[in-house]
Image (cartoon, rainbow, N blue to C red; front, top):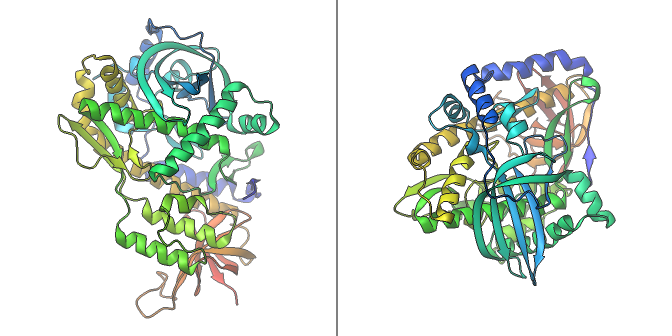
Length: 489
């Protein structure tokens, strides 16, 4: 699928859109201004902060993130090590800024994670930490948990340790810029080795049966000049996948450390059940690219091209295979189910402590286990409480993302009632039999996606998944966050 940026003019609907987005904060009861006691505690922590004694500031780490990011959790360094590799992965030392039992600790447990709303980010930590002292910004001395990996020639982990250290990133790279350098052959060695290691880790993922949904990304961004918002849609860049492989490797290493130590918390997900797999197989058959189970579903998903309408519909259908993710704490007895099925291995969240609460606890547990130290009581005692906190936070973040996207999509087409569009059917419908209808008693409906602007919405009519159709817009209500199309003959 080719890269594209879609920026329809939404100036006429800007006021309604701003009001609807602002209403989301109240409707979802999103966190408001950071409480003063917690902010003051954060400022004090920054003022009194000391770097770890272990000094790795001579290592030329770099960060690779979206260009606009300032809350930088990870920094990377890779070099050759004989016929294998040495990978150093620095993760922001957020625990050093958060006093257990204090006002800041309490507020982060209330929030659970950073929430990304179109009209502003709602951070997990005060900005003095998340975008300043705690962020691995270029040319800034920072504390970090540094994961030290030795990899064999195939990219397999041959040795792992994690320790606290002082680090200093040399450059803040963007995904787009990094990919351009790699494509042009002008990339520095760290990026060339990231590609080399990343590709080998992708192959290892394939062998262990890991799977991922390579859906085109949709992001709500502010339009140039402040005239409302637009939806930027594009497939992820290869360098994003290679970078993600380093994060996945670290999460798998964290899980292994905790399993060996018999204490910690895993990110788990069950394998798809037979019913879901059978339904998915039938969908692939109907859409002309059958999966017979001869290869793993992860391998099959990698063959799909989202630019093909039928294969895009298959990718949407595959979402049913990625359900049931949760957090599994343990202390003393290792749980029976320890695998994150989409990754194909035990896994833990540990690489985004600025933006996700649970990583703070995993990091200190892993560092203690790696170095034979006692695990801090505050981290151990929190383990049973974290699944509920994170589940509630994940649910809220998911609702915010869905409703915000619905709101912006409605604004993008608000002045186009009656217009006709080419569309792809993502989810088909069947003729009404008296039981199924569209909620208004008007018969069958399905879900379609139009290309420009990038909008997904309900459409009345008898629709077949993966087909191209012509539709007319009949409703676009910004306040209600509702769009409706009708199928044209």
